[in-house]
Picture 1 (cartoon, rainbow, N blue to C red):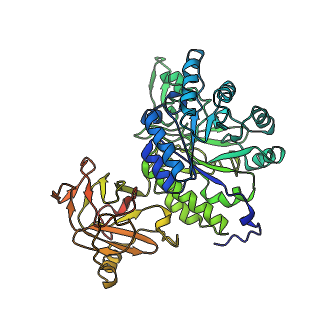
Picture 2: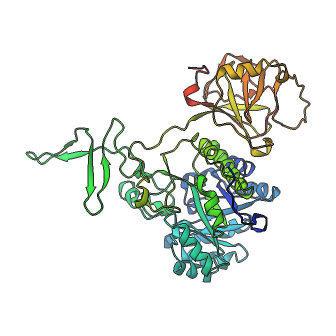
Picture 3: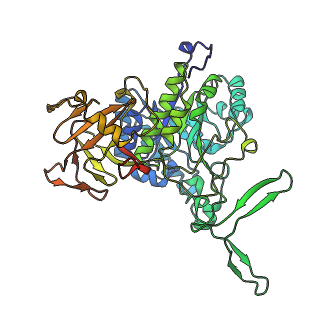
Length: 493
């Protein structure tokens, strides 16, 4: 759909897309699937203890070199809030990360901002969303401290960002466009600290807001707490008549559970404001597939904007293939009370519309199984956008009868012989091992035979099998194979 904007977009500075890097592989995937930059960190100072453990200093150094070889950037997260006992360790950490030559530090605490400027004066400072900047006054304070960019609080509106940019045109503004949202202001919730001693703004949040809680009521006669009899109840705010659902099913209740942020359908509005310099995706602890699909989808939405196009249905089709808690546009476009859709009271998380079956390795010749795969099963190939010349994607998984009818056509039965150094391309092929067909802008693959790299033939392969499986032809490295969840039996029913 053409947007009809009159802005001369060729004269605009292009917005940066920033993706999470929970480990080296996710970093590589995000960069190849469309991210201009990635963010991540090492150790508990990075505000994601689990993701920090997945990155050693050596791996992170490799990641920085790898990104720079692609002319892309790496931002280091040092956005925890340290205690006095950690300051010396923090100084050493800042110096060690400085020596890796990253492109910026992401920092939340004012004291750490000043410390980083002393230890690493040549590394730009980006202010973390944990600092909760909502207005011009706070933005001005940090700008005067030498901060180059603020990652605005998730609770900020687009109008607020435009006002900040008007007063501080040299301050870069970055906003979150996708991923998990906190029940409270980012990092300010104490539920996890009270229940587990795991402090959110120091990187160890237990996500207690997502738990399956159970209801208890006090027995009038005994005074004891007894289990609540499950039935649908609501509480009402008498000031504005807003209802909150109080219901427990077999999995519990989820009254604190915020939906996930999803602003893909609003990219044109955000970029048209000319106030936003970078779009950020949350999710360092999420899957490799998440890293790829979010980077690819938001890259497509950004490129569409500069081509005066918008394909909201396509963006949402892809993002709904991911596990999610339901989606909301959060605060940037509408205020919560205008839509009342920011909470998911039904489940902690739901499956996406697709199941990832396999991840292709860096050679492109083998895949590792992530779900049951059988012979003659059609799977969609997901690769970076550069392998799709027109970006003209269909919006459904074809029926098996349609796929089989395409596979019988002479035009698709092109046998190929791979040379050892052949480049990986996406094309229709058919050989003894399997077949690839092209339908509605997408590529689909099925295996006639399932061989391990060592030559053993299998009837099927399951996620517990760690042996690399041979592909019928080399695919783009870091690709994925997926199937529609309601189509796992590969039939037309």
